[in-house]
Image 1 (cartoon, rainbow, N blue to C red):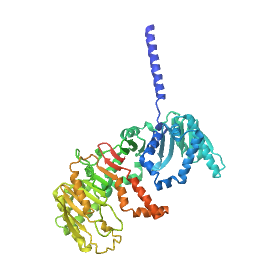
Image 2: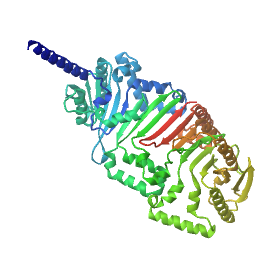
Image 3: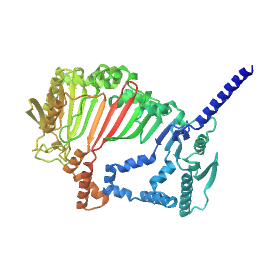
Image 4: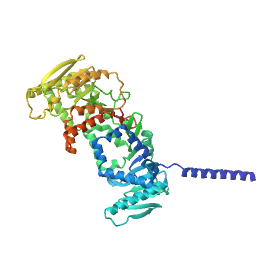
Length: 583
């Protein structure tokens, strides 16, 4: 019996030790900055390591070189910026620390900004939390902040002293009715609402019954969807925002308006089904990435949204066209055949009647051509480019020089090219009767090009600036692709590019785009007049100074590399990425 009691006593002691160890472990669990944000927040912006974020930004060559630009120097010399730097120097002088070390001590464990939403989706409580690594430094900076505010109030003639407060052991100051600050240990708080400040301090004190934003499942899911180790990230709760009348009207409008459906129908549908949206900024080996994620993808699309999403196993978009002088290139998926076959669901009755009327009117001018047949023969892959022109297409110069534009679309049936050519030729004939445009035909790399030129011996009342002399619309069929160029030069470049990329690997992204900063610099150098004039007027400087600044801007643009964007909608999520790829 005694032995048995000893066994029970041992078990009880072991259980007590385990319980004590578990409690100790819970108490010692590492707490993140989100543990200080109340669960009721609808938005959070988080920077885990502010010093790393600032250092990463300041070390970018583009940021360093930008400081030499006159416009940037002017902004840095503004009153608000000067006062901010003066206050920073004040903190360094009073604490005896340089700002990188001071920032680490005061906010090294994170900074978070949260916003709460009230009825109707209106912003309610805003809360800023800074969690430091050195309690003494945090306390000193808090006192210096209060001193600085008091000095500023005195300078403005305010004699009433600041109201001191206490929130759960936290020293607080009421700057005004909508600006409250407090400190508890190594954490600083600022809010526009007393209840928000109190809730954050209760969380810091681990008051029973208080829950933080970190307890939400959607926060964990957001972190999983976003790039690892971001410099900063955000989370926005969509559930309450979507309950507002404005949101409901928006989602209803996107299903009724053809233009909105074509532009972002599937994105709007993903937002409608998602509980949150999250985004992050991350430094990568080749550049900087900004990513946005939604936890809803194509699995929930209605059948008619095959308009934007290809069948399983099919590519999302074709390779980008990158001819010489390319400024911007875009590739995307848009199945117009589905638009026609699902028109009862995608197009409202009024617009459908307009389509039907247009088809009848077209048949009167060009018998045998039907809109439905043209759309069914068209392909789902589209590519668009903007390029710098090697030369102006006319001897007469336009008042405003524009870059060239090009378009390439895949086809399902050879009849598409023939139908579109007949349509363009028929339309060109009608325009030639009133405007005098002339048909032009050439052959390039075995491909027949046809287009139109404007006459240079007449004036047009509707084009006093001669903008038309930027264009000589040109078209061709290249294998299974229909192409259109704003000039013959652009069309020839497209012929070469379409064939060059025919065997290039496609990608799963449904929409891709790329902008080329160096080509932007060339475009600026080719037509600097508008920028020079704007610079002169804005800064009140001489023509020579303005020209020098524009040249300096062009040199800066050449160092920026490229900006790449892509949109993808896999089965269970929506992805958008903007990548700044360094030169």
